[in-house]
Length: 186
Image (tube, rainbow, N blue to C red; front, side):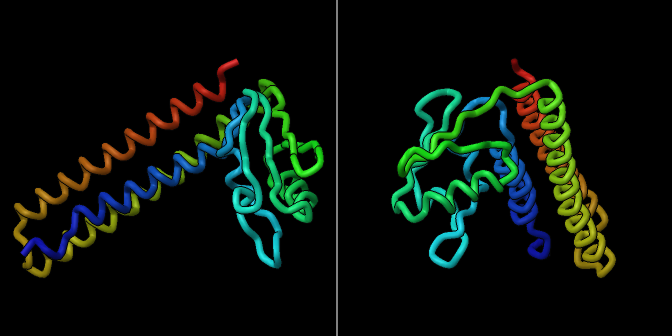
């Protein structure tokens, strides 16, 4: 009877939005070096685009420096170009097969801009969670309308879905607040 509404699937889809915002936040620069900062960098290598970490070893020897050790010396120029064109505001220094990437200090204007971007990511993922809630609510309304579940069951499912949605939105708010504090730290 209740097998047609899968709360675990709704939870999994909502958790997908949480994972998505976490990965988006990793790419937001906070003034500290992080190997994850290079995750969005795609290098034109061997006729296709591939993540930087598949052509090099990325490390952080200092708190404000990222080191990228390129394995194949023919990939140095494409990796340099990919980092410069990734929109991260970073300028690598080529040193043989190693790219040294100093992480510049963030100014107040850039911090405010990054905070707005974090808020935008949060809102996009809140919307994704609400869309999953809407899908679940539509499903239970249809089941109730088709007399496959009772009104009481429909109300119970509605309450569970709303509670799940509220938990996920609260988690996004918590992640966003933490990221904004991290960005604004001087």
